[in-house]
Amino acid sequence: MDEALLEGLERRAMMLLGAGDSEWSDLLDDEDFWKAGWGSKVDD
Image (tube, rainbow, N blue to C red; front, side):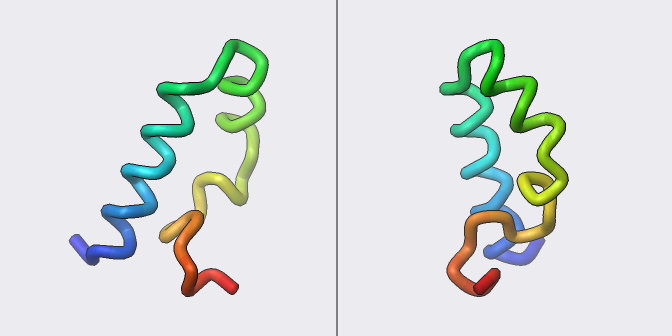
């Protein structure tokens, strides 16, 4: 697995684990949140 994809997966996991009920639901519905490499600097 590409390192950028793994890092994005780890960031999503940490956000979901730390989210409250409302934020959890919002994150699950956010299509940008699920894009490959989410949150990486190369997404600019």
